[in-house]
View 1: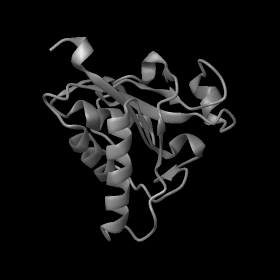
View 2: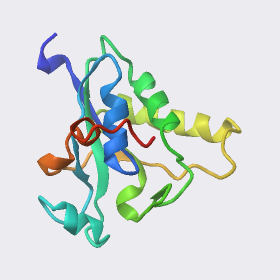
View 3: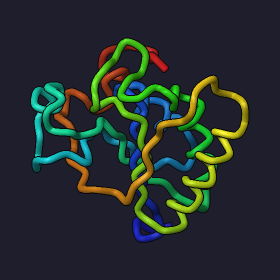
View 4: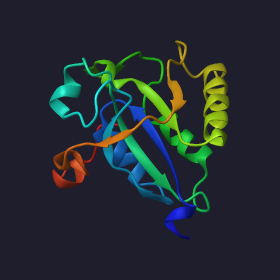
Length: 160
């Protein structure tokens, strides 16, 4: 496989540290840097995003090898790692940057994500409707280096 055979997708599921950690554990995930997407300015800083005024989502940009892991497997991991029914919130983290989101890079991903959201919503697993937004991928802005592999660098297991 070459890099040209890999696909990318962005997932927002609350604080990106735990999301990054969980996706990095999956065989077939090549890279999963933390970053920001969907906001009103280019190259935002963490401090700017935390104000809630830039409208960015904390995301993980997952690069994966579809020959090793399916997009549906990534979706299953995404649904399992957070509560997709809480608008702009995951646990104690509150703000628009913590929204549940899937930002797709192909029509096949978008179709699969929309179908998965419908199936999850109808599954009876949740007490409230799913609020996960699914959109074409906006620009990705890599977060500051101290956010990358945060749990690994700080000897933490995780929060998800």
